[in-house]
Image 1 (tube, helix red, strand yellow):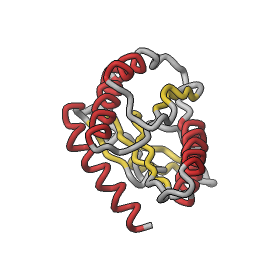
Image 2 (tube, helix red, strand yellow):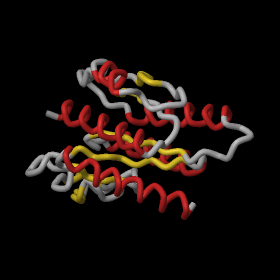
Image 3 (cartoon, one colour):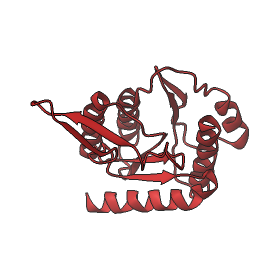
Length: 192
C-alpha cells in the first residue's frame, strides 16, 4: 500500500543521499501534526536507525498538513544555515514524499511556502507516490466554480503548487527518479 511505498521511498532516498555524502539530513513525519523524527545531526541515519524511524511513521492521521511541514522544514533549515555560519552556504533541499493530493485551500498556502523556500534559497522537490489507473494523480481533475456559477474542469496538476516534482509509480524506480529529482534541484539552484 501507500505506507509501504512511502517507507521504501524513504529508505531509498536516505541510502542514495548517504552514498552521495550529501551532508546533514533531517526526517519528519507529517499528518495531523509535524513530528521531527531525525533532527540535523551531521550524518544520515544508519540502517538500524532508519528501521527504528520507520516504526514511528503511523500513516493513521485524518489530515495531511503539508503547509505545516514546510513551515517547520524552512525553520529547521534556517537554523541549520545559522549553525553553518562562517562556512560556505549550504545547498538546501526538501525532498517531500507524498501522494500529492492537496485540497484547494491548501494549495494557496503551499504556493506561499514554495515562494518562501525560493526566497530562502531552498529547493523543494516533491516525490509523488502515484497509483496507476483511474486513481492516478495524472488522471485526476479539479473542479472550480466561477462567480457566475459556471464550472471549470482542469487537470489536477494544472496550477500545482510545486514546480519541481517527479511522479513515482513503482518504488523500484526510485534510484532513477531520485537522480531526476536531484538533477531538477541542481538546475533550479544554478538558475536561482
